[in-house]
Amino acid sequence: EPEVTQTPSHQVTQMGQEVILRCVPISNHLYFYWYRQILGQKVEFLVSFYNNEISEKSEIFDDQFSVERPDGSNFTLKIRSTKLEDSAMYFCASSDPGQGAHEQYFGPGTRLTVT
Amino acid sequence: GENVEQHPSTLSVQEGDSAVIKCTYSDSASNYFPWYKQELGKGPQLIIDIRSNVGEKKDQRIAVTLNKTAKHFSLHITETQPEDSAVYFCAAPMNTGFQKLVFGTGTRLLVSP
Image (tube, rainbow over all chains, first blue to last red; front, side, top):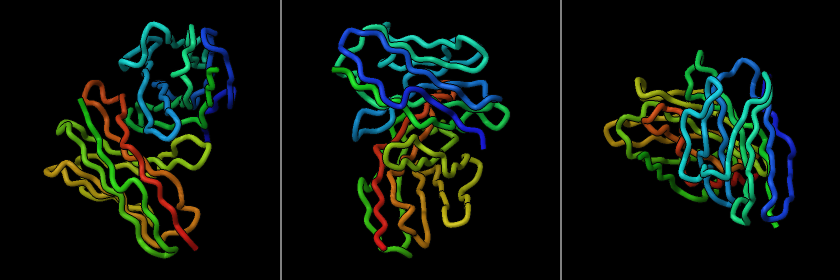
């Protein structure tokens, strides 16, 4: 069964450093998303991406964040200058508009720890 | 914007019992309601969803019911098993573009053998 994959599974970085989180969405999906989950809290939407551009973003997704689809398979989230409060699990998701754009399938996540 | 409330926050049942988790939403334009199961250290897994044109949907031991008038929907798990133990999240889309899912706060379900 196709699935969303994410790398790395755990990333430790120092405050102020840049990080890039990587995702490979399900191959025939056209919508891509990033969500985050601070430890013990609910999952929060960050951004959605379709047709090579951001289609929606939340208030959390400020100028420190950016997304890119550098090739036909990868989807990345970059945090330019990490803060302590960026420590969280980051989940990538994708959906297929042919099956209803709402059905979002999540990857296993990247745990980001900012020290 | 959409606000999703979920309860209970924790639910303990004996193996074989039924479990019910309830969610309410605020945006009457929402028309799609998924449920996700999250096991420790893993990503949310879509287990069942319902669209607003039906009131109930079943998939083996799992069912979801929707009451559009009251703006609430519920997850029902029958004949629970220890492997059902996980955190369950409901969600509803923001009406803007229907892409942004707003999640509930989660229910930790513990099924004891």
